[in-house]
Image (cartoon, rainbow, N blue to C red; front, side, top):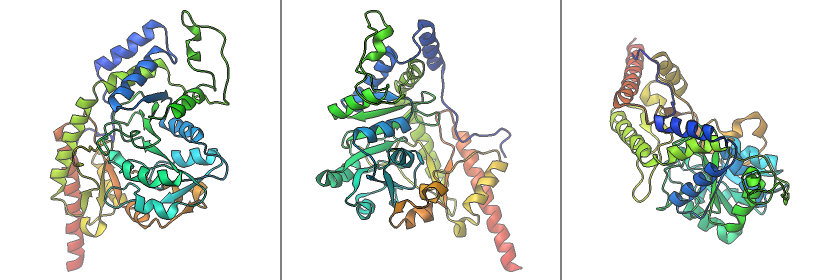
Length: 393
């Protein structure tokens, strides 16, 4: 058993990140400013998408995207229930109604086939999610939505590093919302980004993100700026500060290195888990030119084969100093969403009782992965032996 606790996640912060933040602090510009603009332009350039608007969370990016796409009272937004609750909260907050559809059992992402039964005359937007960083087939979903006049806003919270249809999220859809939360592939501690090729949508989101003030009002405290500005929309307070943007920018510049480390750890997990009955990854490497970001490494626990339930396995791993998580408790199971519209969610209901997320992050070592796999093997073997003893008795 490990002597020290292996947390589910630990941010990968190096001296370069620390120096970038320190330098920003000494320059005296802490809130939204030139570093935010540099973060946006670098992100858009790497993505090959025209516009990137930095905000203070992925939730804010989803909310502003929905507002810009015209979601309001009575509108319906189709989305997976197997996701974080943020998307559904944003829809409800605008007076709309989330409609939950099922996921594909192989990818845990929604597909045109699972979406179609949830589409109705009030459907305004579809929010597909790249589960764990899995390419979500957005080109096909957009092809379904466009002729129907339905917009597509990707929940790309797990998808920094994901390549889908040969491109970054936000390329085929109307927009994509990214997260830079502490557990994501790059972090700004808190933060998000909305990517889009739509000029009008980008401009609207940019204005909405800072109280509805006209473009570049943040420059009013810089040399050459002006105290005069106009408020042209009823907006929100969602801007990202320079001090956090500079951390995200420093991490973004190392994305290829960080992604390579994730790929290696995921490959090792897949290789080592193959010999453990009842425990298997829920995703594998995507075929080129696509790429799984491995923001989350989830496994499925088949109790009959593993000899132990998912919930029991979580506790056994904790006892052995290994942290885990679950992604996700389905939104439709929460008290606040019991009456939400939904179609048949049999895969969501089944898989949500079996999935378990294992530690995977760049500062982990191969020995850490070996420790996790060894613990899984020890636990399942012990439970198999116990069950066999009970059977013989």
